[in-house]
Length: 214
Image 1 (cartoon, rainbow, N blue to C red):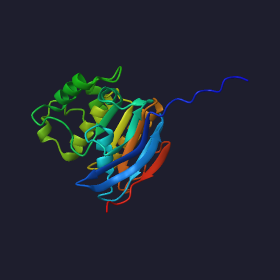
Image 2 (image 1 turned 90 degrees about the vertical axis):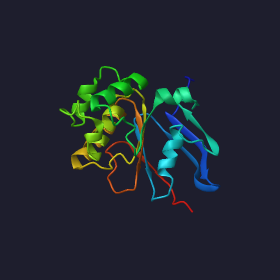
Image 3 (image 1 turned 180 degrees about the horizontal axis):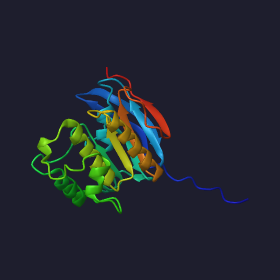
Image 4 (image 1 turned 30 degrees about the vertical axis):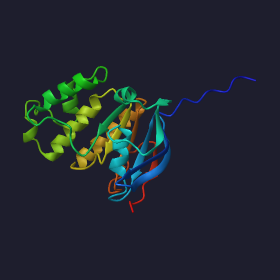
C-alpha cells in the first residue's frame, strides 16, 4: 500500500487554553486550530474575553492553563516573533514620528514582506500623500489605516486582528476584507474578533463563540 499523505500541522493549534483575572475566569478552557488559508472569526459580547484571548495568543498575557503550538512547534517567544502579527485596539505607533517613519521603524524591528515598500503600503490603505504627516495629526480612522499598512508589510503568516473594522468607513471595511483575502490566498491565516456587527470577510471562515464572562 502507498504511504498515507502526512497532513501539515495547523498554523495555530490551541489545547485547553484558559485565562483568569483576579481568580475570575475570563475564558476557557478552549480547544481550536487554524489552518493556512483560513480565518477564524472570534465572536462574543463585551466581557467575553475576545481581546484577552488575542493578547494571550500574541504572548502579551500568560494563560493560566493550556498549550499553544505554531506550525507544529511550542509557541516560544522567538517563534511568535516570526509567525505572529498583532493589530490591537491601540495603534502601537509613535505620535512624534511621521506616518512613513513609523512604518520604516517597525519594518526595521519586525522585518518586511518580500518586495513590499512602505510608501506602496500607504497607498494601498489610502494614505498616499500623508507620508510626512506626524502621527498625532491623523484621525482615528487614518491611524487604523496606518496600522493596516504595518500589518500588510509584516512577513508574519498569522494575523491576530482585534476589531479591525473599528473606526473605519465602508471603504475601510472593504479594505480589511481585501487584505484578509489576499493574505489567506498567499498561505496566511487570521483570527478576527468582532461583536458581530460587521459581516465576516468573504474567505474560508470558521466561528469561535466566546460566552460572556460571569
